[in-house]
Image 1 (cartoon, rainbow, N blue to C red):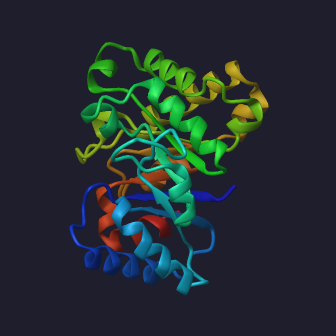
Image 2: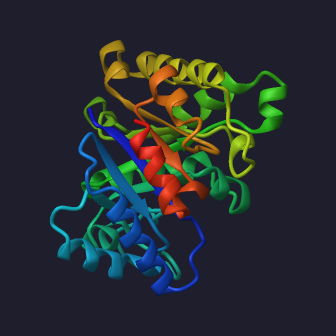
Length: 253
């Protein structure tokens, strides 16, 4: 299993030119990387241009991902983007259930479950984000929250399909704060996620799933999450907007 590093650009880079320039710089800095799979998730409107750039660069280590999708393939759903559209643009991965969408857009576990099922049905890979709030942590509810998020998001997901899902543990209190979770805390959460999967499916299945850490990841702390806490990769936010810092993150692994 290759280390997976996801660059989530979020709602940044306000022009197509700036997105293209960053993409080229990232690609240049990652040319010699062989041991990791790199996924860039830009805003929807930049996907066509970046997909075109990827087709020109056959030796690139970068793959395309999307930050979200709708749960239907097509139809009268104004303002939505379907998994099929994203697949046709060359996307391999789709982020679902990100903490910011849960917080600002009130996405529920039920909505996230429908998206997971849709992504899988169209042959794409969901990056399922899960994690507790600061209040959850202070009240000792981390295990309750993670279990609820995981069990609800995986309803009607078969044992065969579970291996196609990438889990991203992102403590919501660490997102965009610059205060990452400690490696010990993150390790406990990773083991808890595996335990929940083992109870729902099986122990061998739980050992095979890929779990990433997300939340104020940078080049100074990334090794502690992958090498010390046992995660198989990271979901990188603001640091992915700095090509030099992102290259350092990748090279640390």
